[in-house]
Image (tube, rainbow, N blue to C red):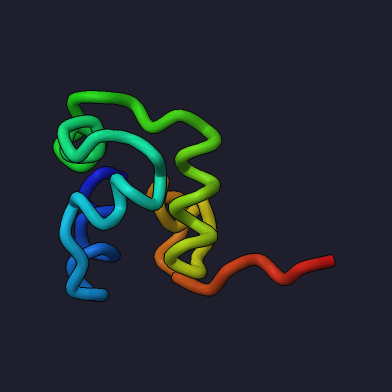
Length: 72
């Protein structure tokens, strides 16, 4: 799952500090998410899925579809 958040970030040509600012955390904390050294809290996982317009299942590696869930 950690590889996917890095790929999503790099696809948008963003730096770790850009996502860290969006998530209100330090660049070091965000880097640890990408490296798998720190588990991603649920609220951060949801924020990342919304930011990247994808599903949490995609980030977690449960699906290969990047399509977000439809809003109900």
